[in-house]
Length: 534
Image 1 (cartoon, rainbow, N blue to C red):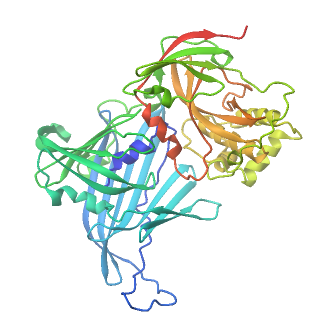
Image 2: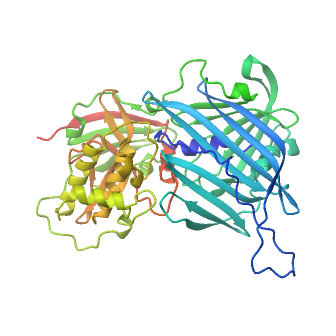
Image 3: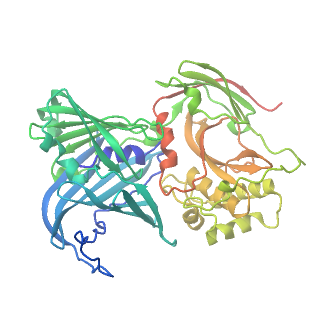
């Protein structure tokens, strides 16, 4: 089957915001139209060809265990698809996984389907994802020569089209499922293959290392001697994904798969019956990924948002250049670097000076654009922005009013809302820090204040830990200033530690979260000193 564990790792990028991906199995890709033979005249309008579903070739059920507790399943269906006089393959996979985030249950559903030739060449695919309740994003891809044309459809918006370079060697779902059966790999051998990664909209090389036979425990405590196979993906945005381990029998059939998902735990899949796959629970409670992702620190910082300066010692295990992963700006300065650790000085409460002259430079246009996530041109977003700002003309005071408005009016502050776009939040007025941030940033852009979202860590005194968080920055007179619409205090303290910022232009996915996977599960933070104003 398609390497679904990779999709889980990417879909859960550093951020357990309850991302929900809807199965595409029920909506197969639009099949390609038959092409005329060479030399044959192309008709003015190609007649529609109705695809016909054929026999089911294979149906697969897998039970998904998260840190030893059954939390979900994988369902795969592979069947014949007849288009005109040609027989193709329609393959679909569906993953459902439930877990806790700060004791509130979330369910991840991921679906991907493709049409491929009987030789495994991909012709078309569909990915559907629901990033918030009632908001479905659909991406339909069709391969045309060396290009993949992707049409993106979102509610209340006109479709958009993008083109990506395509590698015709990329294998489809069915071709990957039968890969080991056809190759019959021997121990201590290696090979590569190409596949398309729908969560990243790109094709990647999969590096396969066949290890040796070993005794493996399956469901029901059954033990069987199976061949261990390890696969790795190419790096993406300098991020290296954990390897996936697969155990196969001498016929090349998969029996078990496993991977460490950063910030989440060990995810294990067992091939089994439908009845077993649909079970839940057992062997202890489902993992709470919110708690798992907390970075414990050596001391509690009281009144964190009132701090003027905090010095941290930060270690990123296995990273020889940790300073490359921690940005520096007016608030954050790396003071010393030693092997895989650094000392970081973070300042809080930095705000624009009173009566400062306006900067000569033009506001950065890319931070004023409306886009899929920060849709500042949405009518409801613009209306809320006008309501929050009123007659105010000063950019900084506009931003302050928006920060306060979002903090006050997002009534249902919960962890069950998925990562919603600004227009969805403007209508639901609920969610966690991500929803606060995207709405505030979009509202700022709607009234002419350049803005961006920031992902980082914030101190949680009740947990004596740092937790992943999102806030915003606004551009005022040539400098960036931070605000936290979740708190609404007109400032942030030195316990807001920035990891990255995003403008969200030209993306309809969660790709901006990807760099956080470089620190998930590898971060150690020690508080060295704390200063307060005065």
